[in-house]
Amino acid sequence: MEAGKFKTSANLVSSLVACKCSRCRTGKMFKNKLSYSSKKNMDMYDYCPACGQRLELEVGFYYGTGYMSYALTVAISVATFIAYWVFFGISINDNSLFIWLGVNIGILVLLVPYIMRLSRACWLAIFLKYEKNWREKPAEAPDRIVEEQMKNW
Image 1 (cartoon, helix red, strand yellow):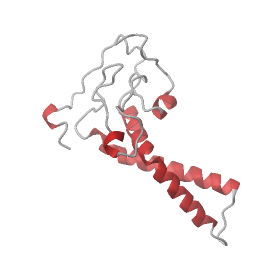
Image 2: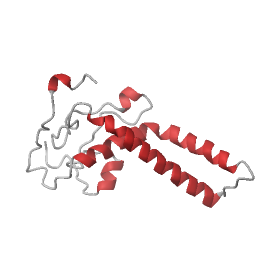
Image 3: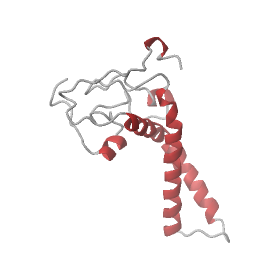
Image 4: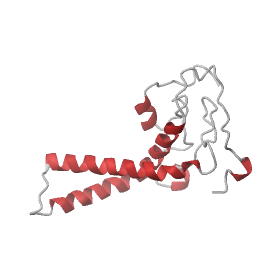
């Protein structure tokens, strides 16, 4: 790995939004650009291209991203509700609540590929902490890896 090839961002939020490795906040987690094809969209590197950290810490590690995806969806829904309420108003006397609901559903459908990726980045960041000196310290191998079971789920 070349020292100048990767630019480190120590900012947690920007590295999560960009779906970067949470150990070095530099290497990309996903092989392909954002896509509505679920196979291409969720195709991840096994190891971070920058620091060499294994991105799947145990068999079935990313099953927990369902919880993270749910939380992100609720947060987006609350944000769109507040924005709609401020700009257009919500009333029980007209159809404004149903219009917001339709707009919210449309926004969520459009954001599904990104929410799926972002939930994986957030989930990894919970369990894998940022290493300031990642260039000098090699990545540790996860202790719960059973290689022959890794692609069985």
